[in-house]
Length: 280
Image 1 (cartoon, rainbow, N blue to C red):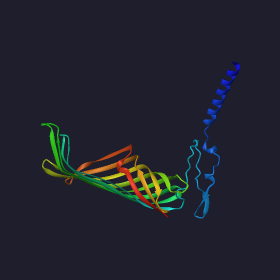
Image 2: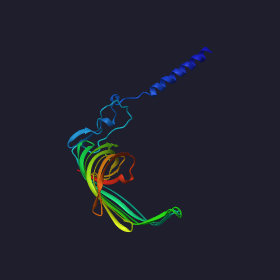
Image 3: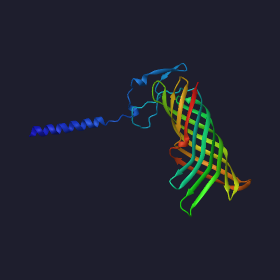
Image 4: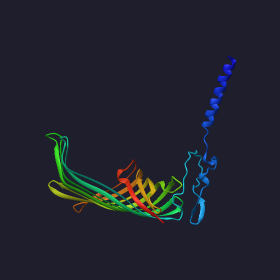
């Protein structure tokens, strides 16, 4: 019986020791050099590590490396664009919505230039032109005999132009420099105009709006080199701070102004941008 008790206690002690060893977490500052960490590449005539060194802020090692994706001293020239369109004709939903005729589209074009001040880190300038058009030909809504109305000949048009300064930080995912992810921080200022035309009391109304706006946007994305010097990019707007000032006039008569500001933290379907970049 004593021998059996001794064997059980020994087994429990061995299991607890193995669990403690398995849970041992290595900090980045204590990481031993691996084979990948001593690989070298030639950049602008200099031999450098393929893995970029990182400062240790007490983080634990998760086995991730930041490979050189785009070296220091390179220029990037690119363009991103987005487009969305919706068109309906004589759509009916149950007995409430009838004869819906709508046509709308929105698109934006953003050329930019950037310079890599450090490997995988770039700063640059960007122009942003956007335009949107919406036409509602007809819409009838019928809740019951006493509550129903219809709309027709309603149109909305807007365009804006903005300039921005941005910082983009890349993370290389493989030692071949083909796949990478990035996060972009953008500070933008711009102005725009819009027109809202509709029928009110059997008379046409035309409201014009002049706007000035500023924003701070954060956009993560994915970058893939499809050729040696050409990459394909996809970015997503997920967080931003914005400020906007508007002044309105209807049929040439000034109606006033307003100022708004706010923040959003959500995936914006209208902020999906596809683009190409040439690195030289």
